Image 1 (cartoon, helix red, strand yellow):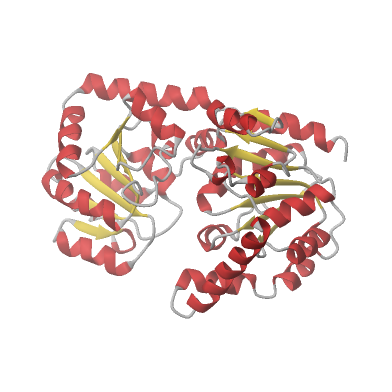
Image 2 (tube, one colour; image 1 turned 180 degrees about the horizontal axis):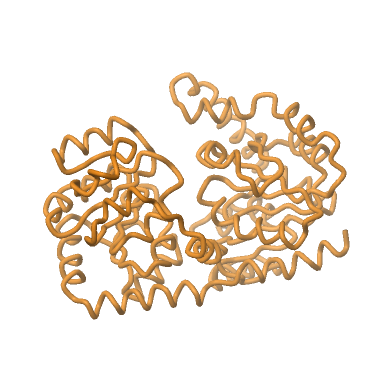
Length: 416
């Protein structure tokens, strides 16, 4: 019965997106990207004689999490072709030209027929699922063919279906993995309590990723001119709910600090509204000129892919999403030693919990709390220096998950 409900649920989701496609841009991309997918795959793989390693990510955040693993795997196993799949348009559309993969596709919808056909075409020697991806039919097909399938940077909570009395079907999905690499010991303990032993606490590959970004940070001349020697408060991956809290704060502090705002999604009407709310003070990145950008106090980023480098210019950072569905990536800012601020919905993220406990990050409920904590930190040099030291040390101490995972992958590939 549970498998039937799962199948009906995945089919219903696909039908809903098809119905929504004419009215919703992301739904349209989801549907269009999968059109003729089983013609696209053999066409692009035609003539390949090298072994294939398949990496799957739900979206852009999971891709960044898996990226250090993909790139180190490629360097250690140059004979392999990398095939990368995404579930969401927000991952595929941004990274469809990623040079680190030989083939990039949307993942066909999960069904027994699609899983068989996909695995027949791709013939992977290894399958890697990043963080939250648990597709029953794909995992069952890989398991049936004895193809190693691993979950990396996985994190689990007692509230998830796997750990409910009625969650037997979903526990069975987890048992299809060859191995699960968790972010923390608490996740490993939950899995062991339901009878899973193919587990290693490896940590989170995002720590390895953000250390890579520090080593290859991009210089952005326009931002260099905008900074003009002033402290910079970077707002990363903001949503409208975040901006409701932030705009009053920004208006209060433009004399002492400059702001860079990088929304999670680029909507021109929302950016123009901010410009209108801050007359003469705010300008969009695409409309700014190096010669005059220093005259503005707020720089609005209207492109994708720049955020990790923007944090290198920061003095403080606010990370969006925690007044809504969930907090975005705090580590991209923490690696630069910035004092962090974010909303109250952060408890699903181990690194955010750790950063709060260390005194590096500050969850806030409203503008007044943000103002009070910011004022304390901004006027206390010793506290800022301590935060910087703690943040950088934390990131370096947590790094190394990629090497742990690849150490075990090597053992499986030797048997292939």
